[in-house]
Image (tube, rainbow, N blue to C red):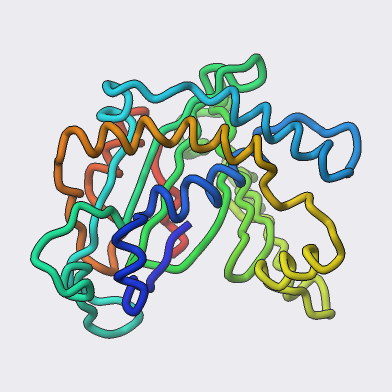
Length: 277
C-alpha cells in the first residue's frame, strides 16, 4: 500500500502510532490473510475468519535478529509529490526529531505446509511515488527453457490484484511474438479493469465496509482473536525498535522509500512491482 499524501493535519495523532500500527497491524496483515488462507468451508463470516486466524497464528515470530534483517522503517523528508514541493515529516510535525516511522517494509514467513519457504513481502508508506494498493503474486521461474537463447528472456508469470485506484486484475504472461521468422518471446498483460468491465458503479473500500456494518456482515471485520494474534506478532517488532533507538531511515518524498527496502527484497533475487507507475 503506497500513498502520495503526508500526515499533514494528522501529524499529532500519527506520531503516537506510526506506519506499523496504523497500516501493517490491520490492513496489510488482513490482505496477507486473504491471500494465504485456505478455502473456508462456507462464506459465513466466522468460517472465513477462522481461516484468517490460522494464517496469523502460523506467522513466524520475529526474533530481534529477524527484526533487524527482515524489516525496514523509514521517514519521509521534503521532496516533490503530486506535482509540487512538499514538506518533510518533521516539518509537518513541527519538531526537530521523531522516531516515528512513515514507511515499513518487511519480509514475512508463514510456517505451514502450504507456504513453507515462500516469502511474503509487505510494504506501506506515505509520500511515495504513487498512491496504490495492490497484491502481486510472483510465480516460480521455469526450471528449464526449451527455447534458444536468442528467443529472449523468459519472465515468470505475475498476477497483480489492484485494490485502488483503478480496481482490477492483471496477469503478466509470456507469449510468442506473432509473425514469421524465428521464435521471439514477449511479456504482455492480460488486463481486466472494473471500470471497463462493469458499467454499474461499484462502491469504494470504506463505503463497502459501512454497508457491511449496516447489514450485519462481519466477514471483513477482525474478530477479537484475530486482533490478539496480529498484535502478538507485531509487538516484538515494536519492542525491538524501541530498544535499539535507531532513527528511521530517511527517504525523499516522491520516491519508493529508503534504499534499504530495495536491498531487503533484492538480496533474495526479487524486486518490488514498481515498473508500471
